[in-house]
Length: 424
Image (cartoon, rainbow, N blue to C red):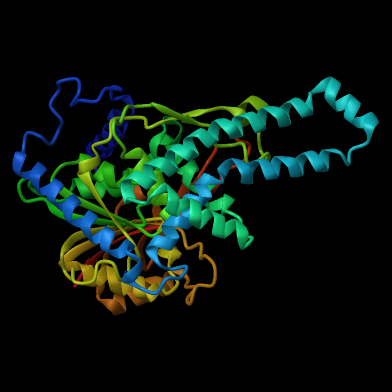
């Protein structure tokens, strides 16, 4: 990629951060896509049709009522956000108990010097502040999905009666994505990865009146998908399995959407690697820009099955920190190939950090070999995506941060692998 394209990508990312905190509809300004009425109508129709399909999938009769049922997964995630304060206060109480193991004379020195009890009290208070956002996420979710308060109450009571604690980790991870995806503090992390992918998309020939269809599986809470939509000439869909992520995304997409209208204290649940206590307790505001919620269609569900019937419908698939989430990586490769049209492009960037009990755990060269066997031809994505990983493979490596606390004393990241593959 030449320097002009690289600077254009950075300009796009910078313009998002600097955009005014004004709803262009209420202010009388013209939204970016309203100039093309046909395109806007098509987007609205896509959202209406997908919402109807989503409601069908959420119906209790749609499949066996178990932990994999979409409605039960949704209720479980709602229960998780609902119990945010209780689960996090439990952890603070554990820390208080551990502090009591310090001798009285030592505690006296600690309290007179750094006031550790005050620190614990402040964290408890800020957890209560965070809980206001968590409960807003619950209410946004209930409204969007059409779940009654009484149904959630009954489900929550059943979980408590059965001794099933809410998943504190999944809730915390989803809420930290407000920082990664939609806060100014996450801009550097986004630039590290988005530049590689957006730069390749910018170079693709396309027309606004005949946009290329792009799918972003594993879209999280949506920033990459929305950045692709900002380029124009792309009709963007994203997919996400996690109901925790989907609830966080629906919170970002709620009305009215005002820049930096919400704040959150994301670093309270991990006390390691802080330079100062104030750094640990600081708030982060989001979203950092106006969000056009109609620009991207979210399709919730299992990537390998929810798009059945859409074979060959997409011009581009973009996978960011996604393929290693597979239970069966070959099924992911086959699904990507199936959904792309002949000659379609697959752009990938991410690590190979396999999760819990995957059926396959493949090395990079094995992934490439299997992708070729499925029917992909690889092309060099270019220098902007990093250094060549292997001399014999057109794959690039780039150090990418992930979930980083910019003021922390550690650096979370990966040597992410990037490639561009064409469906034969």
